[in-house]
Every structure is written in C-alpha cells, then in structure tokens.
Length: 131
Image (cartoon, rainbow, N blue to C red; front, side, top):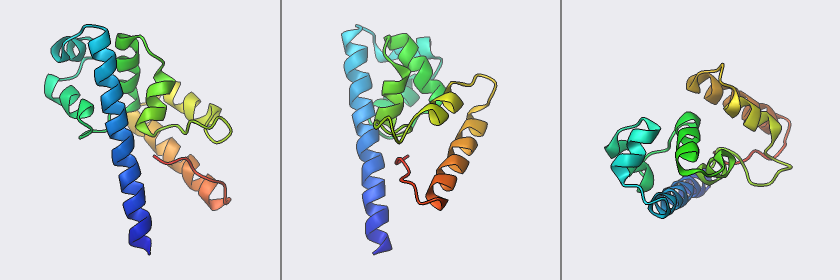
C-alpha cells in the first residue's frame, strides 16, 4: 500500500514537471525565443533548459525566477506548475513565497526551510502541498 502512495506521488511530480516544461516551451515560442537564446538570458546551459522543457529536470526556485523574468510571466505561476507551491491560497502562501523570494538565502537553504516547514505541517496533521 505504501508503494501505491509513492507511485501516485511520483506520477504527480512527473505530471507537474511535464506541465511546467510544456508551459515553458509554449511561452518561449510565443516570445519568439530559441532554446539557446532563453538559456543565455536565464544563465543556464542549453541542454539543461531542454531537459526542463522535456520534464526530465526540476529547476530550482532561482532558475524559475530567472525564467519568469525572461519570459515575462509570474514566478508564482511557475512555482505552482513546478509543484513548489500549491495553487490553493489557503494551503500555500506567504511562508513558501517569502522563503522563495528571499534573496539572502541560498537555494539549498530555501529548500531546507521549505522541507522543515512541510514536516511541521505534516506533524500537526495539516495537509501539505505536494512538492
């Protein structure tokens, strides 16, 4: 039974990454940018961006912010599509967004804080947004 839960969770992550990748590709094409041009603007390699678009890699919050800036879309929307923030404003909210937006923290520190926050919510029997 535990395997069923992990299978559902992993399918959800793969689904959200594919959704993110498809969305990023649509936005890139609408902006008339090549993969290489967008990768240069964001500061990542061309193969890495291609893997994100194909749903093979999960980008960090910092990369998502750079992608949002380059594509002129909401970073929060990309966080939701990546499964970092839950779209329900009652479940996700100021804590996650504040951590992700804090420029004084490294990506590793941000992820650690989000993990600790999620574990506290789970400990207190609150629903935890999927990541």
